[in-house]
Length: 267
Ligand code: C2E
Ligand code: MG
Ligand code: MG
Picture: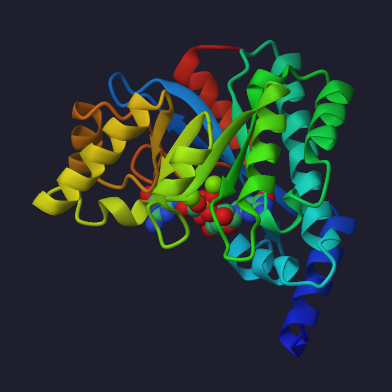
């Protein structure tokens, strides 16, 4: 793997942001579509540059992931996980009820590392019960070993963390995964509801996927909900949670606390 000049500048930007504490974690709320209640959230990283502009993960995560050593993305992901634990602590210190928060973990380092040991140690240090923490992983880059992945998912779940399969329904995922693995949450990719759930074929596929996931005992989260038609369709077909710009964009820590306070009446 050869880094282009642009990759090198990106890496420098990430390391500088870590050093100067300009990595931000945003939280996108997930809601019960039946009553609009806030139930959980996903942590999404951003970097704030010197002009206070936000640089999105799509610009730097792939560069960290493609480094020869898996350490680059691993250290970054663990940093975000730790930040999420301290955010939950902050909520608790404010007397607020905790809700589960999930963190995206890159496939690049998951299998080679004893990831569940890191998760457990960090959660313990921060005093966060495991049930409030989840990890999102995307299924199946070609080079992955499915048996190793299965074992890892098992070990993480054994420790009481939730495991979500992210972006289900894109080129990156297949039904074999659902046969071989037990996960807690399946996240339907936003591309599946691109036609606002009004296209008859889209309706059949989305309703069918929700049904399959529910029969497997999984919680179904729909990503990318931007429109009331999607919300209604997903609710009517038994989707458990919705996440998207329509109910709420990803929020900074402080905005999330304010939003949470408004939504739950917690202090
Ligand atoms: P993802 O995990 O599938 O996250 C959902 C993405 O969809 C987020 O983009 C979110 O802002 C965006 N989104 C949410 N609602 C809507 C909507 O209604 N419409 C549309 N069009 N988009 C919506 P974001 O924050 O740019 O993140 C992109 C990807 O970067 C994430 O996809 C995830 O794979 C990765 N990522 C983010 N944070 C981390 C991290 O800490 N570690 C790792 N390894 N990957 C991360
Ligand atoms: Mg995700
Ligand atoms: Mg996703």
